[in-house]
Length: 350
Image 1 (cartoon, rainbow, N blue to C red):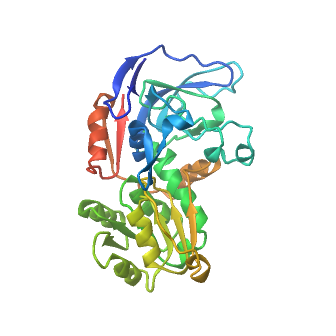
Image 2: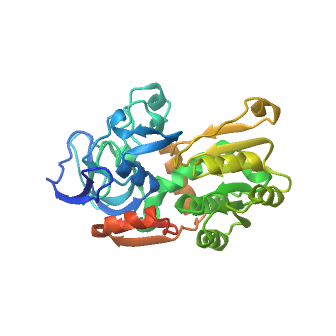
């Protein structure tokens, strides 16, 4: 089979021919139909995360080294399964939950494989979707997408479940007033759609890009704010009638977290999902005096992804703009994402 792999960090992905995997034991072999391209793929391609202050978290220090087959947003068709796997149904179209854990640690045992201490995520540790086939360790990671377009459903495995999981952490605040969504990329547009499906009040969307703010308005945002405006914090406070009480930061940079803190009301809950990087200096008394909850959220659980797919069907959730392109154009697609020229999600198709 053909894979598109990171052989050297920061260098173009290369087409590599490998033997087609054979499913054994509980494994399931899935033929890839659609594979999403996410900012996390860029971090994996670069080989590090920006920790601020000139510091980097090197993926090699976590045992993640080339060759890497990226993409964790995968839809496909079941081809075969091992002798210890329950019958899945040959040709069945599925969404793959990629956030696989070791199955033995405390996090895995409470159903939070996404924060496993020994993660085995597809497209990160295990080979992902930029290939003709992907090997999934167990049928439980496959979600039936009958009735859904696989190209539109693929982003649910990351952009979708990331925003859904973060909103679950915000709880009833979704219904008490607008949620401030920082970042109008694939996750931001997904957040608007998920918020609508959950019956939330709506979103005030913040971004530096005028085209992406327009896309957010078209998707149903209550209002938008230019993050680079000198009075951006004041505009957010006006749009939320006195300050944000619920913030979803899908960028996760020094500037965006600083803006979220400046625009928040007392008692605000800020959830950070983005991994763009940087650091902040925060006077500790502000946390109890305001008092603010500053929380991280990393993708989502298998249960949450199943809930999200069910919600997408039940609420006929609006899909984000998707741009399908041939998998052979993966390097052009990555450069376009790196340049900030993608509205919605790029989906690679074999």
